[in-house]
Amino acid sequence: MTDAKLCWLDIREAGAATAAVLEEAVHQKIDGIVAADPAVFAGLPPTVRKVLLFEDGAATVPADLGEADVVIVPGPRDARAELEAAHPDVQFGRYVEIVDADTLEDACLAARLEAWSVLDFRDPTKIPLEIVIAAASGAPGSIVTTAADTEEAEILYGVLEHGSDGVLMRGRTVGDATALRTAATAHGGEISLVELEVTATTHIGMGERACVDTTTHFRKDEGILVGSHSKGMVLCVSETHPLPYMPTRPFRVNAGALHSYTVGQNGRTHYLSELHAGSSVLAVDVDGRTRPVSVGRVKIETRPLISIDAVAPSGQTVNLILQDDWHVRVLGPGASVLNSTELKPGDRILGHLPTADRHVGYPINEFCLEK
Image (spheres, rainbow, N blue to C red):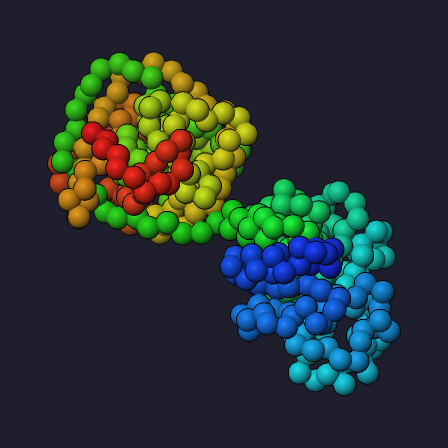
């Protein structure tokens, strides 16, 4: 298996929209176009993998493969030996429809031996895919799994944390390529972090703060980004690290005052006060690696608050208001864990500086003054 998250768009049912769907797919940098007619590949750039898929077997493959890079057919390798001999410059892979234990074993075998395995699971459970992924651990080939829609695609990309190497989804209309690319990028990425220098801390009295309880365990070097302003946030650590008076709660981030921003998927910001069960926020580690995590609960309670001011190397100022308590912490360089009430001018903490202003959470290029 590979680390890449591939997007294959199947245009066999695009009909009159084929040209527009292809144009969008190229714009979205879709990795592979799947078709049954090699003629549709004409004019596509070399950066797009051109895949011919024939579920009915090798006998239906045309003699002229055109510009095809990959041909996928069902059945064992010896059933396509003549095809491979006739087309030495084309890669071949196996299509497997999984409906029972025997075909699941075929899928495991394909995933271990084939350069490309296109798997079509007919039952809604994802346990068979988990079995295939485990069976193919360490194998050099790629598993591409069919998805009915983008909601299923997101799930397939995340199965067993590693997910399928790629997803094959039907592209019937304009918008499908963009939706598939969005699903592929929803499972991790990177965000730029900077070192901020604390300039002041102020005890500001009572207010409401939000604890964000997620449905996942955070790592010790991981938290969520929170800030009073949309253009400057601080990396708040989860309650993963031991505390003297209470058990650890590695699913929780004591995040900040309810007015604060945090970052969700696709760079959209949310107020802590508007998060709820089922929302998604971005977990971020000290190296800037991200993953979306689901919110299970948000606890908003009245507590004493502390305001932390900091400045970036660029001179941009950042503010974060937290619960005024020693056990509420932020992350610093080298994954150092810093108690908020012990922060003092000159201390270094990690933060993020989004470049765009916001309108209902979405980035927008407009004038916006926050202070």
